[in-house]
Image 1 (tube, rainbow, N blue to C red):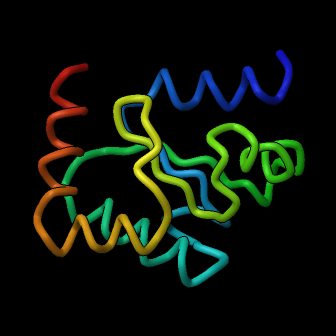
Image 2: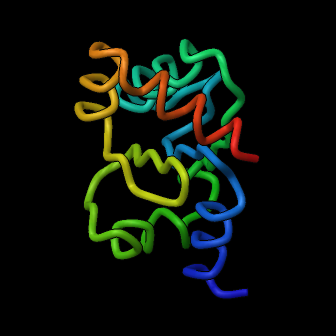
Length: 106
């Protein structure tokens, strides 16, 4: 499977997935840390991909949805955005609803 197929598979097979630097337990950047904390605070399970552990994903993920930075959050197969957008949605109470709906569909 090529790298774009692996990315696509992660996005489509998980109701909520974050591509981040590090892991939710051991984030390797502040933006990834804040974004993972917001997702964790939603109270639902979510998948994660450590882009630092996979150089191919690190290099090619920006092409996947034409989004240049990390982290990237996908809910229901759609790019939500990075740290700023995710945090804004969380503060408005919208992220919690989006995550819950996506997880409950499964």
